[in-house]
Length: 509
Image 1 (tube, helix red, strand yellow):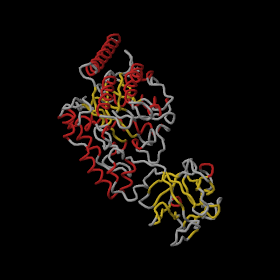
Image 2 (cartoon, helix red, strand yellow):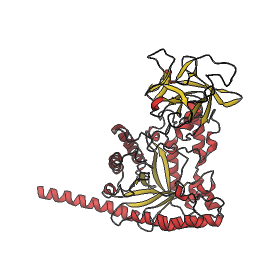
Image 3 (tube, rainbow, N blue to C red):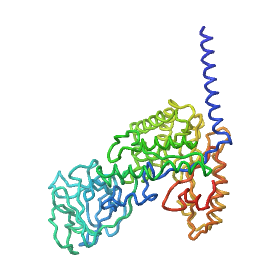
Image 4 (cartoon, rainbow, N blue to C red):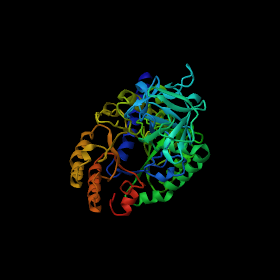
Protein backbone atom coordinates (compact mmCIF):
# COMPACT_ATOMS: atom_id res chain seq x y z
CA UNK A 1 0.00 0.00 0.00
CA UNK A 2 2.79 2.39 0.91
CA UNK A 3 4.57 1.63 -2.37
CA UNK A 4 1.37 2.27 -4.35
CA UNK A 5 0.79 5.52 -2.46
CA UNK A 6 4.36 6.65 -3.19
CA UNK A 7 3.94 5.71 -6.85
CA UNK A 8 0.79 7.81 -7.09
CA UNK A 9 2.60 10.76 -5.51
CA UNK A 10 5.50 10.46 -7.95
CA UNK A 11 3.10 10.15 -10.88
CA UNK A 12 1.20 13.24 -9.69
CA UNK A 13 4.41 15.23 -9.40
CA UNK A 14 5.48 14.09 -12.87
CA UNK A 15 2.16 15.08 -14.42
CA UNK A 16 2.23 18.44 -12.63
CA UNK A 17 5.71 19.04 -13.95
CA UNK A 18 4.55 18.23 -17.45
CA UNK A 19 1.62 20.63 -17.13
CA UNK A 20 3.99 23.41 -16.00
CA UNK A 21 6.40 22.67 -18.84
CA UNK A 22 3.72 22.48 -21.52
CA UNK A 23 2.12 25.68 -20.26
CA UNK A 24 5.33 27.67 -20.51
CA UNK A 25 6.49 25.94 -23.69
CA UNK A 26 3.26 26.96 -25.39
CA UNK A 27 3.62 30.57 -24.31
CA UNK A 28 7.34 30.81 -25.16
CA UNK A 29 7.10 29.41 -28.69
CA UNK A 30 8.33 31.65 -31.55
CA UNK A 31 4.74 32.20 -32.63
CA UNK A 32 4.16 34.41 -29.60
CA UNK A 33 7.05 36.68 -28.69
CA UNK A 34 6.30 39.63 -26.41
CA UNK A 35 6.13 42.89 -28.38
CA UNK A 36 5.05 45.30 -25.70
CA UNK A 37 4.80 48.91 -24.74
CA UNK A 38 5.09 50.32 -21.23
CA UNK A 39 2.15 52.34 -19.92
CA UNK A 40 4.56 54.56 -18.02
CA UNK A 41 3.43 57.69 -16.20
CA UNK A 42 -0.09 56.34 -15.69
CA UNK A 43 -0.49 54.48 -12.39
CA UNK A 44 2.96 55.52 -11.18
CA UNK A 45 3.56 59.22 -11.82
CA UNK A 46 6.68 60.50 -13.55
CA UNK A 47 6.53 64.26 -14.00
CA UNK A 48 8.80 64.38 -17.05
CA UNK A 49 6.29 62.24 -18.95
CA UNK A 50 3.38 64.61 -18.31
CA UNK A 51 4.63 67.85 -16.70
CA UNK A 52 1.18 69.48 -16.84
CA UNK A 53 0.01 67.11 -14.11
CA UNK A 54 1.91 69.32 -11.63
CA UNK A 55 0.73 72.68 -12.95
CA UNK A 56 -1.93 73.28 -10.31
CA UNK A 57 0.29 72.70 -7.27
CA UNK A 58 1.02 75.87 -5.23
CA UNK A 59 4.77 76.39 -4.81
CA UNK A 60 5.37 73.44 -7.11
CA UNK A 61 9.11 74.13 -6.98
CA UNK A 62 9.04 73.12 -3.29
CA UNK A 63 7.82 69.53 -3.45
CA UNK A 64 8.97 66.60 -1.32
CA UNK A 65 12.59 65.80 -2.05
CA UNK A 66 13.48 69.24 -3.38
CA UNK A 67 17.11 69.95 -2.51
CA UNK A 68 17.77 73.46 -1.27
CA UNK A 69 20.93 75.31 -0.29
CA UNK A 70 20.69 78.43 1.90
CA UNK A 71 23.27 81.20 1.72
CA UNK A 72 23.37 83.86 4.43
CA UNK A 73 23.22 87.26 2.71
CA UNK A 74 25.10 88.80 5.64
CA UNK A 75 28.09 86.45 5.69
CA UNK A 76 27.74 85.15 2.13
CA UNK A 77 28.25 81.61 3.45
CA UNK A 78 26.04 78.53 3.37
CA UNK A 79 24.05 76.86 6.11
CA UNK A 80 25.51 73.44 6.79
CA UNK A 81 24.72 70.39 8.91
CA UNK A 82 28.01 69.96 10.77
CA UNK A 83 29.41 66.47 10.11
CA UNK A 84 26.43 65.82 7.84
CA UNK A 85 24.07 65.66 10.80
CA UNK A 86 23.91 64.65 14.44
CA UNK A 87 24.96 68.02 15.84
CA UNK A 88 24.57 71.77 15.21
CA UNK A 89 23.72 73.77 12.12
CA UNK A 90 26.37 76.33 11.16
CA UNK A 91 26.70 79.00 8.48
CA UNK A 92 30.38 78.93 7.66
CA UNK A 93 30.76 77.18 4.29
CA UNK A 94 31.96 79.22 1.33
CA UNK A 95 30.82 76.55 -1.14
CA UNK A 96 27.99 74.02 -1.07
CA UNK A 97 27.95 70.25 -1.38
CA UNK A 98 26.19 67.40 0.46
CA UNK A 99 26.29 68.74 4.01
CA UNK A 100 25.05 72.11 2.77
CA UNK A 101 22.06 70.61 0.97
CA UNK A 102 18.69 70.16 2.71
CA UNK A 103 15.93 67.88 1.40
CA UNK A 104 12.36 69.04 1.89
CA UNK A 105 9.56 67.06 3.45
CA UNK A 106 6.48 69.04 2.52
CA UNK A 107 3.74 69.48 5.14
CA UNK A 108 1.73 71.97 3.09
CA UNK A 109 2.52 74.64 0.51
CA UNK A 110 4.49 76.83 2.94
CA UNK A 111 5.47 74.49 5.80
CA UNK A 112 8.29 71.96 5.59
CA UNK A 113 10.77 69.77 7.39
CA UNK A 114 14.43 69.72 6.38
CA UNK A 115 16.34 66.44 6.15
CA UNK A 116 20.14 66.56 6.14
CA UNK A 117 22.85 64.39 4.61
CA UNK A 118 22.82 61.74 7.35
CA UNK A 119 18.97 61.65 7.32
CA UNK A 120 18.38 63.58 10.56
CA UNK A 121 15.92 66.46 10.63
CA UNK A 122 16.71 70.10 11.38
CA UNK A 123 15.01 71.30 14.56
CA UNK A 124 15.38 73.29 17.77
CA UNK A 125 17.65 72.17 20.58
CA UNK A 126 15.04 71.28 23.19
CA UNK A 127 17.74 70.01 25.54
CA UNK A 128 19.36 73.44 25.72
CA UNK A 129 18.02 76.97 25.46
CA UNK A 130 15.38 76.05 22.87
CA UNK A 131 16.66 78.42 20.20
CA UNK A 132 19.84 76.84 18.87
CA UNK A 133 19.31 75.08 15.54
CA UNK A 134 20.48 71.47 15.35
CA UNK A 135 20.05 68.35 13.20
CA UNK A 136 19.74 65.48 15.67
CA UNK A 137 16.22 64.05 15.34
CA UNK A 138 15.77 60.80 13.41
CA UNK A 139 11.99 61.22 13.49
CA UNK A 140 10.44 64.57 12.69
CA UNK A 141 7.93 66.35 14.92
CA UNK A 142 6.61 69.81 15.67
CA UNK A 143 9.98 71.30 16.62
CA UNK A 144 11.40 70.04 13.30
CA UNK A 145 8.77 71.94 11.29
CA UNK A 146 9.48 75.26 9.60
CA UNK A 147 7.69 77.80 7.45
CA UNK A 148 9.43 79.20 4.39
CA UNK A 149 8.52 82.86 3.87
CA UNK A 150 9.47 84.19 0.45
CA UNK A 151 10.28 87.75 -0.51
CA UNK A 152 7.48 88.83 -2.84
CA UNK A 153 9.91 90.77 -5.02
CA UNK A 154 12.63 88.11 -5.15
CA UNK A 155 11.39 84.59 -4.38
CA UNK A 156 14.94 83.25 -4.16
CA UNK A 157 15.28 85.20 -0.90
CA UNK A 158 13.58 83.63 2.11
CA UNK A 159 13.19 83.70 5.84
CA UNK A 160 12.68 80.47 7.77
CA UNK A 161 10.22 80.58 10.68
CA UNK A 162 10.70 77.98 13.40
CA UNK A 163 8.02 76.31 15.53
CA UNK A 164 8.65 78.84 18.35
CA UNK A 165 7.40 81.66 16.10
CA UNK A 166 10.82 83.23 15.49
CA UNK A 167 12.95 83.26 12.37
CA UNK A 168 16.30 81.54 11.94
CA UNK A 169 19.29 83.82 11.82
CA UNK A 170 23.02 83.38 11.36
CA UNK A 171 24.22 85.24 14.46
CA UNK A 172 27.75 84.26 13.62
CA UNK A 173 29.17 81.87 11.08
CA UNK A 174 29.21 79.16 13.79
CA UNK A 175 25.93 79.94 15.55
CA UNK A 176 22.47 79.65 13.97
CA UNK A 177 19.53 80.41 16.23
CA UNK A 178 15.75 80.76 15.99
CA UNK A 179 15.21 84.08 17.78
CA UNK A 180 14.82 86.77 15.11
CA UNK A 181 11.57 88.73 14.84
CA UNK A 182 12.29 89.48 11.19
CA UNK A 183 11.73 92.80 9.43
CA UNK A 184 9.75 94.35 6.62
CA UNK A 185 13.09 94.98 4.93
CA UNK A 186 15.13 92.31 3.17
CA UNK A 187 18.49 94.02 3.42
CA UNK A 188 21.85 92.41 2.72
CA UNK A 189 22.99 92.83 6.32
CA UNK A 190 19.94 91.06 7.80
CA UNK A 191 21.10 87.77 9.43
CA UNK A 192 17.61 86.26 9.02
CA UNK A 193 17.63 86.51 5.22
CA UNK A 194 18.91 83.63 3.12
CA UNK A 195 19.30 83.22 -0.61
CA UNK A 196 18.14 79.83 -1.84
CA UNK A 197 19.49 77.65 -4.62
CA UNK A 198 17.36 74.78 -5.88
CA UNK A 199 19.70 71.97 -6.91
CA UNK A 200 17.15 69.36 -7.91
CA UNK A 201 14.02 67.55 -6.95
CA UNK A 202 11.58 64.76 -7.71
CA UNK A 203 8.25 64.59 -9.52
CA UNK A 204 6.80 61.22 -8.62
CA UNK A 205 3.61 59.84 -7.13
CA UNK A 206 4.48 61.02 -3.62
CA UNK A 207 5.24 64.53 -4.84
CA UNK A 208 2.07 64.97 -6.90
CA UNK A 209 -0.34 63.60 -4.29
CA UNK A 210 1.28 65.34 -1.31
CA UNK A 211 1.69 68.50 -3.37
CA UNK A 212 -2.00 68.82 -4.14
CA UNK A 213 -2.95 67.64 -0.66
CA UNK A 214 -5.87 65.49 0.53
CA UNK A 215 -8.60 67.84 -0.71
CA UNK A 216 -7.44 68.20 -4.33
CA UNK A 217 -5.28 65.15 -5.04
CA UNK A 218 -8.08 62.55 -5.33
CA UNK A 219 -9.85 64.40 -8.14
CA UNK A 220 -6.62 65.34 -9.92
CA UNK A 221 -5.43 61.74 -9.96
CA UNK A 222 -8.79 60.28 -10.97
CA UNK A 223 -8.93 62.73 -13.87
CA UNK A 224 -5.42 61.73 -14.89
CA UNK A 225 -6.08 57.99 -14.69
CA UNK A 226 -9.28 58.26 -16.71
CA UNK A 227 -7.80 60.35 -19.54
CA UNK A 228 -4.08 59.52 -19.93
CA UNK A 229 -4.67 55.90 -21.00
CA UNK A 230 -8.11 54.94 -22.33
CA UNK A 231 -9.77 52.00 -24.05
CA UNK A 232 -8.96 53.43 -27.47
CA UNK A 233 -5.25 53.09 -26.66
CA UNK A 234 -5.61 49.32 -26.33
CA UNK A 235 -7.28 49.26 -29.74
CA UNK A 236 -4.35 51.27 -31.13
CA UNK A 237 -1.88 48.86 -29.51
CA UNK A 238 -3.58 45.76 -30.91
CA UNK A 239 -3.77 47.25 -34.42
CA UNK A 240 -0.11 48.29 -34.61
CA UNK A 241 1.91 45.14 -34.20
CA UNK A 242 1.96 45.00 -30.41
CA UNK A 243 0.53 42.21 -28.30
CA UNK A 244 1.31 43.13 -24.69
CA UNK A 245 1.39 46.03 -22.25
CA UNK A 246 3.72 46.33 -19.28
CA UNK A 247 1.86 48.29 -16.60
CA UNK A 248 3.93 49.91 -13.83
CA UNK A 249 2.10 49.97 -10.48
CA UNK A 250 2.96 51.18 -6.99
CA UNK A 251 2.86 49.19 -3.75
CA UNK A 252 -0.01 51.32 -2.38
CA UNK A 253 -2.38 49.82 -4.96
CA UNK A 254 -2.77 46.78 -2.68
CA UNK A 255 -4.39 49.04 -0.03
CA UNK A 256 -6.92 50.54 -2.43
CA UNK A 257 -9.42 52.19 -1.94
CA UNK A 258 -7.78 53.57 1.23
CA UNK A 259 -4.01 53.62 0.69
CA UNK A 260 -1.70 55.30 3.22
CA UNK A 261 -1.33 59.06 2.88
CA UNK A 262 -0.56 60.90 0.71
CA UNK A 263 -1.56 58.32 -1.91
CA UNK A 264 -5.17 58.33 -3.05
CA UNK A 265 -7.57 55.56 -3.93
CA UNK A 266 -8.71 54.61 -7.41
CA UNK A 267 -5.67 53.13 -9.13
CA UNK A 268 -6.87 49.55 -8.55
CA UNK A 269 -10.14 50.18 -10.37
CA UNK A 270 -8.11 51.71 -13.19
CA UNK A 271 -5.98 48.58 -13.38
CA UNK A 272 -9.17 46.51 -13.48
CA UNK A 273 -10.25 48.60 -16.47
CA UNK A 274 -6.93 47.93 -18.17
CA UNK A 275 -7.39 44.18 -17.82
CA UNK A 276 -10.89 44.44 -19.22
CA UNK A 277 -9.68 46.42 -22.25
CA UNK A 278 -6.77 44.04 -22.73
CA UNK A 279 -9.14 41.11 -22.87
CA UNK A 280 -11.41 42.90 -25.36
CA UNK A 281 -8.51 43.57 -27.74
CA UNK A 282 -6.54 40.32 -27.20
CA UNK A 283 -3.66 42.10 -25.48
CA UNK A 284 -1.58 40.46 -22.75
CA UNK A 285 -0.61 42.23 -19.52
CA UNK A 286 2.62 42.26 -17.53
CA UNK A 287 2.05 43.67 -14.03
CA UNK A 288 5.23 45.47 -13.04
CA UNK A 289 5.82 46.50 -9.41
CA UNK A 290 7.56 49.73 -10.33
CA UNK A 291 7.49 51.35 -6.88
CA UNK A 292 8.21 49.21 -3.82
CA UNK A 293 7.73 50.34 -0.20
CA UNK A 294 10.70 52.43 0.91
CA UNK A 295 11.88 52.85 -2.71
CA UNK A 296 14.26 50.34 -4.27
CA UNK A 297 16.34 52.94 -6.11
CA UNK A 298 15.64 56.43 -4.75
CA UNK A 299 14.23 57.68 -8.06
CA UNK A 300 10.91 59.41 -8.60
CA UNK A 301 9.61 56.45 -10.62
CA UNK A 302 9.86 54.34 -7.47
CA UNK A 303 7.92 57.02 -5.56
CA UNK A 304 10.79 57.96 -3.28
CA UNK A 305 9.87 60.84 -0.99
CA UNK A 306 13.29 62.48 -0.89
CA UNK A 307 15.68 60.35 -2.93
CA UNK A 308 16.34 57.88 -0.13
CA UNK A 309 16.54 54.18 -0.93
CA UNK A 310 15.31 52.06 1.97
CA UNK A 311 13.72 49.01 0.35
CA UNK A 312 14.96 45.59 1.40
CA UNK A 313 16.67 46.74 4.58
CA UNK A 314 14.36 44.75 6.87
CA UNK A 315 12.46 41.46 6.74
CA UNK A 316 9.27 43.39 7.43
CA UNK A 317 9.81 45.55 4.38
CA UNK A 318 10.44 42.53 2.17
CA UNK A 319 7.37 40.72 3.49
CA UNK A 320 5.23 43.81 2.87
CA UNK A 321 6.37 43.74 -0.75
CA UNK A 322 5.64 40.03 -1.07
CA UNK A 323 2.13 40.75 0.19
CA UNK A 324 1.63 43.24 -2.65
CA UNK A 325 2.65 40.58 -5.20
CA UNK A 326 0.37 38.06 -3.52
CA UNK A 327 -2.55 40.50 -3.66
CA UNK A 328 -2.07 41.39 -7.33
CA UNK A 329 -1.56 37.81 -8.50
CA UNK A 330 -4.57 36.57 -6.56
CA UNK A 331 -6.72 39.28 -8.12
CA UNK A 332 -5.73 38.66 -11.74
CA UNK A 333 -4.54 35.03 -11.86
CA UNK A 334 -7.69 33.82 -13.58
CA UNK A 335 -7.77 36.67 -16.08
CA UNK A 336 -6.64 35.27 -19.46
CA UNK A 337 -4.77 38.49 -20.23
CA UNK A 338 -2.26 38.09 -17.40
CA UNK A 339 0.96 36.77 -18.88
CA UNK A 340 3.56 37.81 -16.31
CA UNK A 341 4.23 39.44 -12.96
CA UNK A 342 7.41 41.48 -12.58
CA UNK A 343 8.41 41.34 -8.91
CA UNK A 344 10.24 44.68 -8.76
CA UNK A 345 11.64 47.25 -11.19
CA UNK A 346 15.26 48.42 -11.29
CA UNK A 347 16.59 47.73 -7.80
CA UNK A 348 19.74 49.81 -7.45
CA UNK A 349 23.08 48.35 -6.39
CA UNK A 350 24.75 48.53 -3.91
CA UNK A 351 21.89 49.88 -1.79
CA UNK A 352 19.92 46.74 -2.61
CA UNK A 353 22.13 43.77 -1.81
CA UNK A 354 22.04 40.60 -3.84
CA UNK A 355 21.20 38.62 -0.70
CA UNK A 356 18.13 40.71 0.12
CA UNK A 357 17.03 40.67 -3.51
CA UNK A 358 17.37 36.88 -3.80
CA UNK A 359 15.44 36.48 -0.56
CA UNK A 360 12.64 38.62 -1.92
CA UNK A 361 12.62 36.99 -5.35
CA UNK A 362 12.29 33.53 -3.81
CA UNK A 363 9.35 34.63 -1.66
CA UNK A 364 7.80 36.65 -4.50
CA UNK A 365 8.05 33.71 -6.89
CA UNK A 366 6.31 31.48 -4.37
CA UNK A 367 3.57 34.10 -3.92
CA UNK A 368 2.88 34.10 -7.67
CA UNK A 369 2.90 30.31 -7.84
CA UNK A 370 0.42 30.10 -4.97
CA UNK A 371 -2.14 31.56 -7.36
CA UNK A 372 -0.89 30.90 -10.87
CA UNK A 373 0.97 28.04 -12.53
CA UNK A 374 1.01 29.75 -15.90
CA UNK A 375 2.09 33.34 -15.32
CA UNK A 376 5.73 34.08 -15.99
CA UNK A 377 7.72 35.59 -13.13
CA UNK A 378 9.99 38.42 -14.21
CA UNK A 379 13.12 39.24 -12.22
CA UNK A 380 14.63 42.65 -12.87
CA UNK A 381 18.40 42.86 -12.90
CA UNK A 382 19.91 45.29 -10.42
CA UNK A 383 21.15 48.49 -12.03
CA UNK A 384 24.64 49.79 -11.31
CA UNK A 385 28.01 49.82 -13.01
CA UNK A 386 29.45 46.85 -11.10
CA UNK A 387 26.50 44.46 -11.46
CA UNK A 388 27.13 41.07 -13.06
CA UNK A 389 24.34 40.73 -15.67
CA UNK A 390 24.06 37.01 -14.83
CA UNK A 391 24.00 37.38 -11.04
CA UNK A 392 20.39 36.19 -10.84
CA UNK A 393 20.95 33.04 -12.90
CA UNK A 394 21.69 30.67 -10.00
CA UNK A 395 18.33 31.58 -8.47
CA UNK A 396 16.25 32.08 -11.63
CA UNK A 397 17.39 28.84 -13.23
CA UNK A 398 15.61 26.95 -10.49
CA UNK A 399 12.30 28.69 -11.21
CA UNK A 400 9.89 27.38 -13.83
CA UNK A 401 8.77 30.17 -16.13
CA UNK A 402 11.33 32.74 -14.99
CA UNK A 403 12.39 35.76 -17.03
CA UNK A 404 15.35 38.12 -16.62
CA UNK A 405 14.55 41.77 -17.41
CA UNK A 406 17.30 44.06 -18.69
CA UNK A 407 16.96 47.71 -19.69
CA UNK A 408 18.99 49.11 -22.56
CA UNK A 409 19.22 52.86 -23.18
CA UNK A 410 21.83 54.64 -25.31
CA UNK A 411 21.54 57.65 -23.02
CA UNK A 412 22.56 57.42 -19.38
CA UNK A 413 26.31 57.10 -19.74
CA UNK A 414 29.09 59.38 -20.89
CA UNK A 415 30.11 56.88 -23.57
CA UNK A 416 27.11 57.99 -25.66
CA UNK A 417 27.79 61.72 -25.35
CA UNK A 418 29.95 62.08 -28.46
CA UNK A 419 28.62 59.21 -30.57
CA UNK A 420 27.33 59.81 -34.08
CA UNK A 421 24.08 58.30 -35.31
CA UNK A 422 25.94 55.49 -37.07
CA UNK A 423 27.99 54.77 -33.96
CA UNK A 424 24.77 54.46 -31.97
CA UNK A 425 23.39 52.05 -34.55
CA UNK A 426 26.64 50.05 -34.57
CA UNK A 427 26.56 49.93 -30.76
CA UNK A 428 23.18 48.22 -30.93
CA UNK A 429 24.26 45.63 -33.50
CA UNK A 430 27.58 44.93 -31.77
CA UNK A 431 27.54 45.74 -28.04
CA UNK A 432 23.87 45.27 -27.21
CA UNK A 433 23.75 42.10 -29.28
CA UNK A 434 26.71 40.71 -27.35
CA UNK A 435 25.15 41.71 -24.01
CA UNK A 436 21.91 39.98 -24.91
CA UNK A 437 23.73 36.87 -26.15
CA UNK A 438 25.62 36.72 -22.86
CA UNK A 439 22.45 36.30 -20.84
CA UNK A 440 20.65 34.04 -23.33
CA UNK A 441 21.15 30.37 -22.53
CA UNK A 442 19.38 27.21 -23.62
CA UNK A 443 18.62 26.02 -20.09
CA UNK A 444 18.41 29.30 -18.18
CA UNK A 445 15.71 31.92 -17.71
CA UNK A 446 14.11 33.68 -20.66
CA UNK A 447 15.38 37.15 -21.56
CA UNK A 448 13.32 40.33 -21.76
CA UNK A 449 14.40 43.83 -22.81
CA UNK A 450 11.79 45.41 -20.59
CA UNK A 451 12.69 49.02 -21.41
CA UNK A 452 14.27 50.66 -24.44
CA UNK A 453 13.62 53.76 -26.51
CA UNK A 454 14.54 55.11 -29.94
CA UNK A 455 16.19 58.22 -28.51
CA UNK A 456 19.84 59.20 -28.81
CA UNK A 457 22.13 61.91 -27.46
CA UNK A 458 22.77 63.15 -30.99
CA UNK A 459 21.50 66.67 -31.65
CA UNK A 460 19.75 67.41 -34.93
CA UNK A 461 19.15 63.81 -35.98
CA UNK A 462 16.83 63.35 -38.95
CA UNK A 463 13.76 61.18 -39.27
CA UNK A 464 15.82 58.70 -41.29
CA UNK A 465 18.41 58.59 -38.48
CA UNK A 466 15.74 57.67 -35.95
CA UNK A 467 14.26 55.08 -38.28
CA UNK A 468 17.67 53.37 -38.60
CA UNK A 469 18.24 53.51 -34.85
CA UNK A 470 14.78 52.16 -34.05
CA UNK A 471 15.04 49.38 -36.62
CA UNK A 472 18.40 48.25 -35.21
CA UNK A 473 16.85 47.86 -31.78
CA UNK A 474 13.82 46.01 -33.12
CA UNK A 475 16.14 43.56 -34.88
CA UNK A 476 18.46 42.95 -31.92
CA UNK A 477 15.93 43.05 -29.09
CA UNK A 478 13.64 40.84 -31.16
CA UNK A 479 16.13 38.05 -30.40
CA UNK A 480 15.32 38.18 -26.69
CA UNK A 481 13.67 34.88 -25.88
CA UNK A 482 10.75 36.48 -24.03
CA UNK A 483 10.53 39.72 -25.98
CA UNK A 484 10.78 43.48 -25.52
CA UNK A 485 8.83 46.51 -24.29
CA UNK A 486 9.23 50.09 -25.55
CA UNK A 487 9.24 52.95 -23.02
CA UNK A 488 6.56 54.35 -23.26
CA UNK A 489 3.21 54.61 -25.06
CA UNK A 490 2.76 58.34 -24.36
CA UNK A 491 5.21 61.10 -23.50
CA UNK A 492 5.46 64.84 -24.15
CA UNK A 493 8.93 64.08 -25.57
CA UNK A 494 8.08 62.71 -29.00
CA UNK A 495 10.76 60.05 -29.41
CA UNK A 496 9.84 58.58 -26.02
CA UNK A 497 6.23 58.18 -27.17
CA UNK A 498 5.70 55.00 -29.19
CA UNK A 499 2.27 56.29 -30.15
CA UNK A 500 3.85 59.36 -31.78
CA UNK A 501 6.65 57.34 -33.34
CA UNK A 502 4.19 54.95 -35.00
CA UNK A 503 1.75 57.65 -36.10
CA UNK A 504 4.55 59.67 -37.69
CA UNK A 505 6.27 56.79 -39.45
CA UNK A 506 9.42 56.64 -37.32
CA UNK A 507 9.00 53.05 -36.21
CA UNK A 508 7.05 50.00 -37.32
CA UNK A 509 6.80 47.28 -34.67
